[in-house]
Length: 394
Image 1 (cartoon, rainbow, N blue to C red):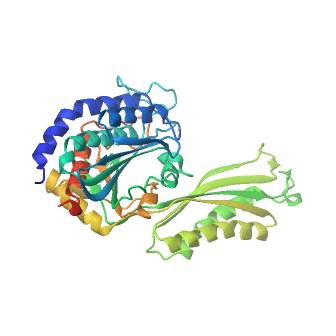
Image 2 (tube, helix red, strand yellow):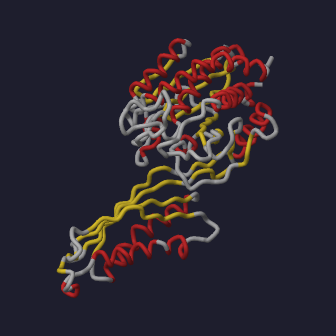
Image 3 (tube, one colour):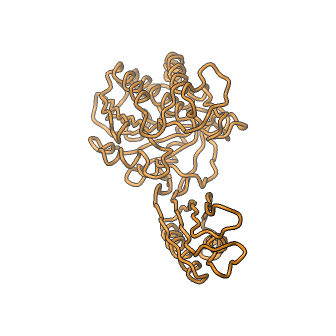
């Protein structure tokens, strides 16, 4: 007999105080990518008290817990990221960051505490679980280069047992507390990065004809890169090419030898992603050569796009609506942000969804962002229901 939502809510109400305490403890002690040692230790302490088997140092500092039901069945995986950001906190709260220049500015303290809370709730509902639940506590989502997801997968996170489905959430200041939001298909873009070095020939600024100006070449290259989205890709395909850093020169009256710049590209479609990469590698060299200089390009493919499975999304929608009410699941807008949850979705069907934080004036990655503790109850409820209602468990 299936457990009723009202019973799950009562359990959540009972475990909520300790999970809120954990969330604030994690907020006070933020750890950045691949340094989440204390955070992992706190997670393991809770899991072992629940007698949930866990592996540590997965993908360097990750933790994987496995809760087995009493009967055979599918494996449902749930993922939370643990890392903080190198941001100096401006919040005036009693649990503000005690680590100078680091804070949980993206809500990962809430994600971690939420998943620990789900483990507590499911442990008390374990008689209703067929199969198993895999709890993935991941480091270094904020890396931007090789994130923790890749390393955890390489370390066997998606084996023994292999998940049949996976769910991940992320707090969002856009949506109100008590709601979740998602969308089928493309949800978040691939996130790739590039660095370009433009080489010219130095000269006195008063005699530009005696040199080859890499500053002028750089300007032309940056302008030309914008034609990738406007002239090389179907206008109906989302593409972003952004240059976010330019560096060169040492004085106002010297034409430098070299200028460097770097940026990022974002796409959804794999073929478009390949086209954008080829163009970013080609355009700087062609433009620089035409202007008498030369260029070197380093292009780093990092996170693929997050593509939500349509059938799993339909299940999320039905489950969240049942648990939270008719307006509990909102339609999310696709984002050009990136997330390494995409790596899990390359081999396992699943859905990434947003957890309403209800703080529209406190944006992610800002020095004033703070996870709303009230959202923990929503996150625990939805994730618990997803596990217990997964279709193959009926």
